[in-house]
Length: 341
Image 1 (tube, rainbow, N blue to C red):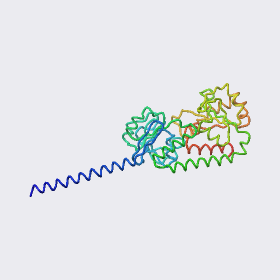
Image 2 (cartoon, rainbow, N blue to C red; image 1 turned 180 degrees about the vertical axis):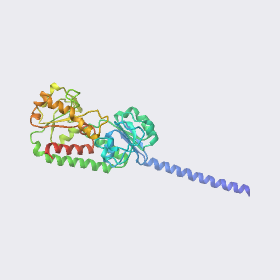
Image 3 (cartoon, one colour; image 1 turned 120 degrees about the vertical axis):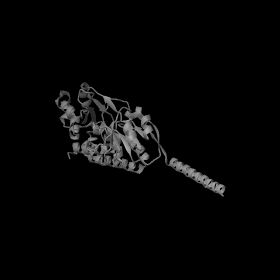
Image 4 (cartoon, one colour; image 1 turned 45 degrees about the vertical axis):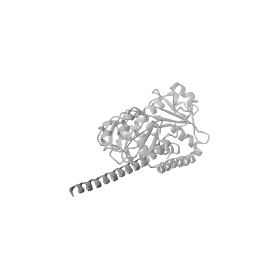
């Protein structure tokens, strides 16, 4: 009787193990079926789970997830928060995006060289970075699925990246709505500018910290140039390179180039952000180059200057952020410049 009982027990144990294995195999098959391969600028990443905790390296990808309705679980930026701690003063994360953040993300250190230790500890579902992170890509990918993007300032690139990110998040319809809304805003702004532009549509884009500090031009191939082209402006260029986004320019050559411009937009930047509030950071972006422009005899004699058609804006916003959120701010500020409201 004892032998029969043992055989009976062993029989049911065997059946149980078989069923358990089959369920495990079915679960693995289901997981595989839910996986998707996401192509990005530095490889192909397999994502098999719902994304909830996103670690973001840099403001560009931060803006992208915010536009899709997601909040950062971890953030690596350029300000001096204590690494590994939660960032409680979220408004200081970014001068533009800080007000849109409702969570207290973990600080991952500098976006260029994030803390792998902190990332491993907080276990994100997804890591987002840029070209600056390509040397860390293999390490980041071992922690969580990682998507890296490059050339964000090229026209059409943020829309492409947004679509890629939305695919990973299963938010493709939302991404298309964002892109459609952006196009509608452009069309409305173009209609409002028709009388103002008229035959005066030649635009020169300049950027720099000062007139004698690495001054350069932005071309029509840039995201910003593309926005203005769609509004009906013609972007002045000095290069026949169809892929060039920026071109260096000397102060001495500015009179010849600048005399063609009906409108001049100057994007200032200043990397001195230590111990400064967001409002001070934004104000400092254009302070130096604006003073240089007002005091220089060459720039004071340009037609656009004489006609009060020179405008100063933040490089960080107009060409350093990119995406739907930045575009909305740009169009709003452009209306203030040209329509005076």
